[in-house]
Image 1 (tube, rainbow, N blue to C red):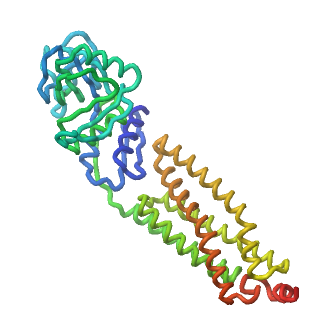
Image 2: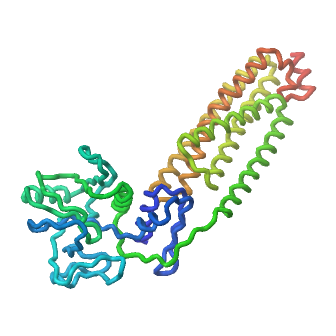
Length: 401
């Protein structure tokens, strides 16, 4: 579970939308990455252990690429032994190994001491680097080490391989940088350091690319279902509420355009959970119009004029619309936080689209529909209550009143 959680954090750092990460048996983990642009880079980011160490080289600089043994140990073998030759990792073509009998260097801090890591650039050369911040007692320990070794080299090591060996110019506390790599390597290393080192080395058993036909077919079917549902709702609104129903359909089209524009700006990837959240928000937008029109009909039945009925309908329906939509938005915030905290991107996608949709529905129901109704009343297009959904008998009674 620890390895799976680390992989999930690394995948989230890649910016993949709704990945699938699940265990299979006791020794396999299945990772599905939809829409990944560089599969080879993703595999490298996921499989590398990314064990960061800053070591004391005892005054001797180590060349970049040197493979070392440290007191922290190796992620694939027990390197904590005091004898130099006992810390060698398995002999595989892909993994560099230290020379037999090489010294064991003291680890000052490691990746577990980091609170954050991110990509930056050298202010002088503009070259990419990885900046990191230390947490807890590691900050004080690193300060004491650099204070006592000013003018001497230290080595930055990732997966037992020296990245650089800078000289200590001054006491360092709280943060540091790692340079000497390309922007792609810096991004990968920052992602790995933030997610944490793997507890065990991983081997890629199989890797294949699956075509998007299944996902595209599911999304197409969902869109068709949404269009059919919208058409059914539009027909009901027009038949039952008549002219206000037509206005609600127009407001719904404006609502959809605004929502998709926001999805493009944020941006939001419309996956199946995201589509579900969007369709649910459409239902809430329709519900707001239903509340408004029902209140308008009640006001007309009580004998109010068309102008007064329109205003009173909106004024009386607004508290219910506001409370229900704000409650839903609060729930969306909680769901989004929970999804971010647990790495469940399915939940975050649903919560985000629902939140945006509900927020826009508040605007469209109160502003767009109200403006259209006021315009038609002022122009004299609406001359009787029948166009607002009243029966003929109710219209005559209203006119008589």
